[in-house]
Figure (cartoon, rainbow, N blue to C red):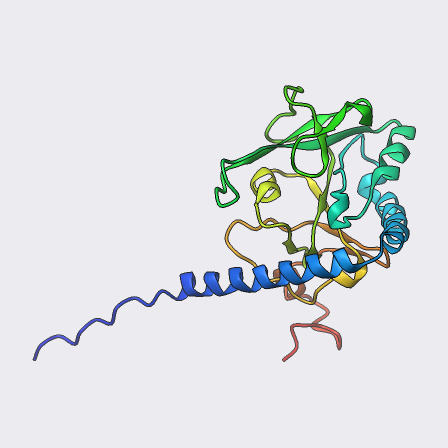
Amino acid sequence: MPDAPVPPDLPRMPAEQDLRRRVKRELRKRARGIRRATPLEACAARSARIVEGILSLEPVRTARAVSLFWPIEAEHEPDLRPLDAALRARGVRVAYPALERAASSEDKTGQMTFHFVGDVAELAERGGGFAEPREGAPALSRDLRELDVVVVPALALDPAGQRIGFGAGYYDRALATVAIIKVGVIFDFELLSEVPTTDGDVAVDWVVTDARVLRAVRSEELCAPSTAGAGPESPCRS
């Protein structure tokens, strides 16, 4: 009797990853449109509350060095510039990222480096719509051992810390192998119940909005065995 034919391997994972990428593209497009439609005055008020939330975090209160980001004003990003001044008043060293840009937007090999900045006057717009350390400024080590916290921009986040950014992958590549506290910031209306994950995604450890501060909890932590058992609010209950 001849052997039964072996069915070909089905490309389940690639197909699933492709679906997740398409969903993320649509979510990104929608998030950018909603954010751009939000009045600047409302963004400023919400940004002030985000700054308060970041300053309340224990990892930030004890930090000696923190990386921030300069807002892309055309995209109505949260404005953390007052946080820079507040941290420096505490004696905290402040760093900012710079982009070593790829040849095209489709090229996912561009790199992000981080640099201590003595004064925001040292930053300059370099083509990305936001201020960066000047070209040639000394960079921190790739493992970012000089930093305690990195504050990460996002277009959307979920309670597990999964993030939707602008899609170029700079932060994901820079933080993929770095053991450091990552704080993601968004406006509260950009907090989603779930962000689809794709290969190479790096989750943040804290989510700070203008209305709440969340310690990111991964699904495996939510469903870890407990001597107390699954309570009435546990997501592990069937």
